[in-house]
View 1 (cartoon, rainbow, N blue to C red):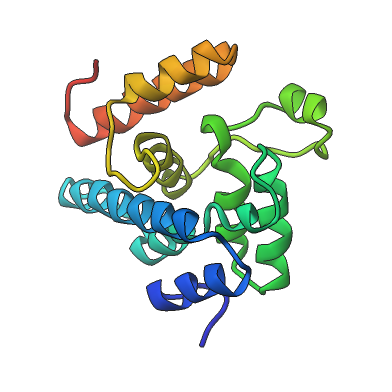
View 2: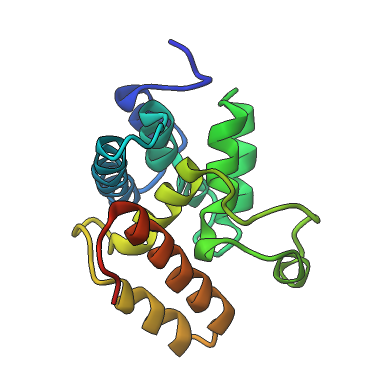
Length: 178
């Protein structure tokens, strides 16, 4: 087994071994399925992507929820992933998936170390986007659902980042965005 970039079964086993609740595991599987659906459509448009990284990163993006269910699950997940010997690319997906990214100012307000928590690579963006679209494990919901949820909670900047990420992904897919 290569813990650096685990396959689907290995990633799910990591979630189980770290005591992620079953509903989180189901959510991660749904996010991975949706992220791969997006990635395959992008590959059909000749966009080069690492499907194995997308699948593993999507499956493991919420591994920190084995420790906490707050926004800090991203930071907890980074530590879990590093302890498991996972690839830095997976660590970055885990670190950068919350709220379509966290700015340095927001990170400071959360008490996080100064770092880049905004998705950078297309693989990171796809996993982040899929996570925003998948409600629990029910599959894709309209992006407006997540945007309105963030706005209602007072997270205007995060809502705007989600909106912009939606535009970026749908433009790449050649789809219209609402």
